[in-house]
Length: 344
Length: 276
Ligand SMILES: [Zn+2]
Image (cartoon, rainbow over all chains, first blue to last red; front, side, top):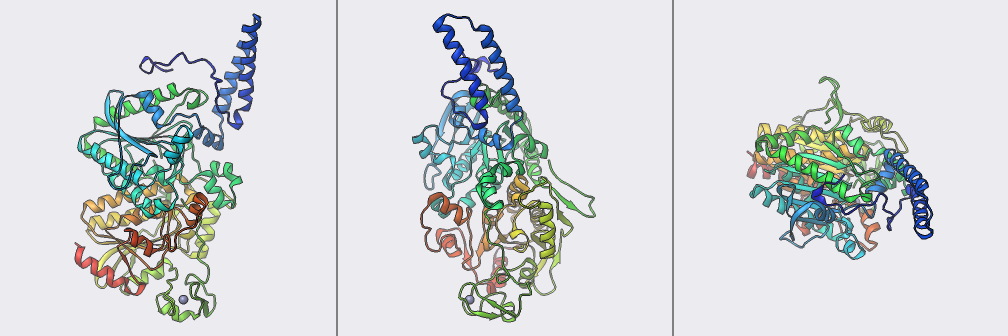
């Protein structure tokens, strides 16, 4: 549960208030509605439904648990995209004591799809960088729904270099469907921007922690996610391509996105097992969108602890380990050298 | 990212015994295949550059008999048990049968006009040159070899992008190869990236764009997102010549556009200026 530092404001047990309901959450929504109905009756007509309400609440909790413990990969993708899932600026509000935003790549523009700034986080001074999708329509359009142009990646790199110069660790939060596929993006070299970021992050002389908080869409994600430690929120996804994109190419239509989601092994559990991520950060029961405070607290705890550990290492050792970490990813067969599968 | 690029058809690549004649997809001329082969797979009429398989490309680039293949024991597996309309394990087998290669990259040492170097060439005949664990590993070993022996490195890109069937593992190859190139850069070695038709997706967004010098063959498709993905997103006409070599040069992302017949001289020249 959330601690005092986060000051959760009397979070009710179930929060029915205008929450967007995902398709597979319908049975849960129905139970919630029943509880509300009984509560309304109880207060209006002064009848005692305490027992019934308790029973329904118990049913709700066990169904919520059952549903979220058995999410299919495709359901996970939907949770990761939930419109009320906390985003970069929500996390800043929830766990940064201070955030001083830095604007622009000093080349072309300030891309609002990637936000960067100086931040105080759990006793650390850090350079905090992440995708932001936008919360209302106006902000979503300004942020291009979290799909960054090259200037976003270049701003991120500029800020990382500042961090390196001034001895600040870098924290990146990934939440993007992918880099923006448009004319300007190509003209200004989005591929080059992502490539340079990966190369420079691999040798940046300061600790780096990356967490995929929502969507980890291909090059757009890894363009800010080459780090000493890489984690994912429990219900985030991370893959070389979106399930829809994969379905479109391999199944020649978007209807097979659920099959593609399963085939791509994009959940935190799968990726922890394959050795691509170091940690899956548990989310509150029913996903981060049900309880952003607790989600933010878990994320903050992970980042703080990881930074403490990384700061203790000599930078040379850190760089060596960072290189080896990515160097060793890949699974193949090598005759003669014993069937070697290098991963994790 | 890994948008499907039309795989090379019989008319587009060499090595397919499709008879004595072939049609140029650009000017439409019927060409005597032997003449095209002798012309480095370039249409003598309009200079259209056909796609080239990795072994043929290596032969075109290296001094005769100097190519020494390395890391050839590395083979693909199906780490995620990926199944779409076809199982990846079966796809690997049929692609190996069709291309007579284990995967989509050929690597080793060689000489160009007497200058020693390390080369890695992507093969469009194997799953459209897509990058999975094998391609990433062989590239990384080639880069590390160049750094260790302080040799110039040439990588020839020809790829539809990252290999979806290896999902996040193939995404990680982008970081892995880029990190290795960071070390090559620290070692002060020369890296020449040669972009050929097509260079797209996760290949463009990693090692391809990290060359000290970036050379492109004429009119090659080079980009991050595929033209179809872009069109689907923005629903507007793409500019003339969009994502072609000349467009990238004009936008500042390609240093030189070099005709296939001049590649050896160009590489040798750069080595003379910048090689160790
Ligand atoms: Zn022609």
